[in-house]
Length: 257
Image (tube, rainbow, N blue to C red; front, side):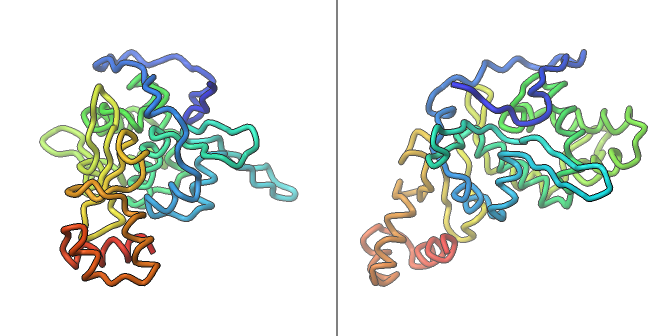
C-alpha cells in the first residue's frame, strides 16, 4: 500500500535536532485504509470540495508569460485503481480537519506550507497534523520557528496561529477550539467530534459505524436519521424512537444539509 504524505516532506528531508516524544508508526488498518471520498470529507469538515481536492492532489496554476505556481498534496490519500472508490483514510480526515482549523484562523494555505514543513521536520513525522504532538508541542515548535526565520511573511503566518503567553507559544483560541474536539490514542488522532453540528454531539471514529458520523450518546449513524427524515418522518417521531431531544434531531438534519 502506497501513501501520499501530507506535504513536501514526501521527499524525505532530514529531521531537525529538536527531540520530541516518540510516536509509534501509524500502521493500524482501521486508520490507514481509505474509507472516505473527497466530497464526503469536505462536507464533514465544512469546506468547499475544490479546496479539499487541492489538499489531496495538489495543483498547478499556469500563468501566461509568468512562472507557474504549483502545490503538492497536504493530506494522506491512497489512490484507487479506477479513481472512483474511497481514497482518504481516517488519518487523512484528521489532517484535513486540522488544516481547516488553520484556515479558520485566516491563514492562506499557500502561506502555511513552510510552517507545516517545520512541524513535520521537528516533530519528525510525515503526518504531524494527525499526531498528538501537534497539540502538545506544535505551538511551541511554530513559535521557535517564528523566532528563527528571517522571512516576515512566515512570521506573520505564525502570528495568525500562535500567541505568546507566560513566555510560551500556545495556539490561538480558534485553533484550540478544533484541537479540543480530538481524542488521541497511542499518539494519534482516533476520534473527532465534528463542529458541523451545533446542537448535537456527532463524532467520527473508524472503529465505529465504519467511520461514518455517529450520534455520540446513542451510537446511531447520522445517515439513519437523515434517511428517515427524507422519507417524511417527523422530528418528533425520530426523537422518540432514538431517545433524543427534538433539538438534537433538528440539528442533525440541518447539519447534514
